[in-house]
Image (cartoon, rainbow, N blue to C red; front, side, top):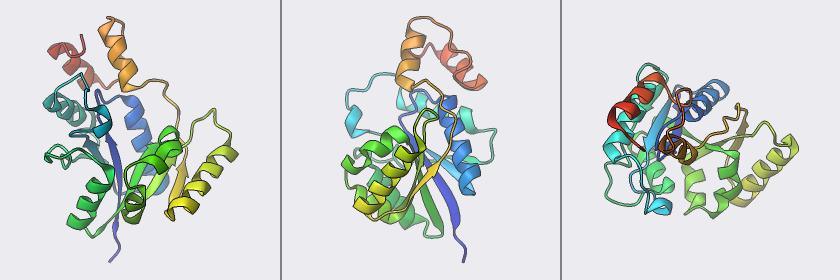
Length: 202
């Protein structure tokens, strides 16, 4: 039986912004995916003192951002766990629950550069392909070198994809909102209305 090709977009999504959606779209199109799962992190171990939106608000914003796009789905697999959110654990759970799905873990080039230092990266590549998006200002030969180094080191499938570089992060966006600056075009209409209506990050 032919397995479904499923992309994984993980992150705190605090808040989810157009950069996340553009990356998911690029992966969907270039890898021929059947769908992309957005998985908000429950308890990210590297952000234990995180301040921002509540878990429920982060879930609401992701749901609002993707609900009109049939290519995207929301998964609460990490939110439903009491443990810290480790990527290898999440992907092991997904593959165990859905053996008919083939997973593609979507990351940016900055994450690819540090991927070898993540917790149990060798377990991640056992269960998923790694799809890394390059930066438009990056020398393509450097990207290919990074991919090949990870292939050799971790014996996994590392794939390069191209994506427009949106120069904004969730951290920077929170700062913009806190300063009272305009952020209208960094998020979808529904997410913008939700943030304003609930006074998040102000």
